[in-house]
Image 1 (cartoon, rainbow, N blue to C red):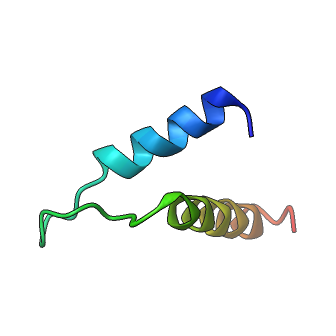
Image 2: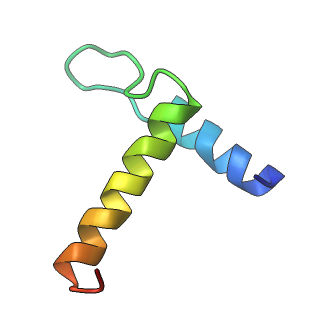
Length: 50
């Protein structure tokens, strides 16, 4: 991963806070990556690219 990608992951991790608990949504970088991949996969399925 390049530095820009790592910075984006850190931004997502620190800026997403649960409205219910007030804690971070993502516990670590892997959770951010897993969520992003699942979201991209779902969008591609909806657009019938997969």
